[in-house]
Amino acid sequence: MPVMNKIKEAIDAGKIGKVCEVQANFSAAIKKPNPKGRLYNPALGGGNLLDMGCYPICFAQLFMSVTNLKIKSDVQMGSTGVDIASQILLENDKQQFARLSSSFRDLMPKIGVITGEKGYIIVDHFSCSDHATTLFKW
Image (cartoon, rainbow, N blue to C red; front, side):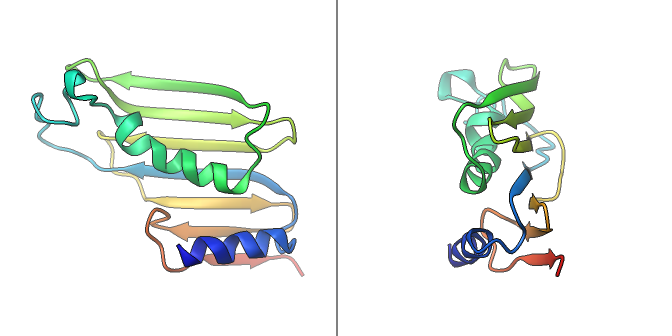
């Protein structure tokens, strides 16, 4: 995705300073869950983390070091035995953090934010975005 390449270039050039935190949300509020369908059926590999949670995780991985990670997570399980919502907190040995959310239950904005010491970058619909909003301290 060209916008991600541009964001990486801006970060590598020090535009926002050292990356301190990455935030990302990805969701779709599914009002009528189908227990036999792919998303809610454990026998078919159903679950929110596998289907939607991978997007915020990959976004964070693009902009922060993933070595020596401490991982904290919380999950909400649905009636079919698959996870329907998750919260993930990552911290690495470079004092970078990530706060990541995904859900079948809630409707959240699909926004990614990379925060640095001198500014931040906001990416609307980060999984398929063609633009980003930036704020740098000069």
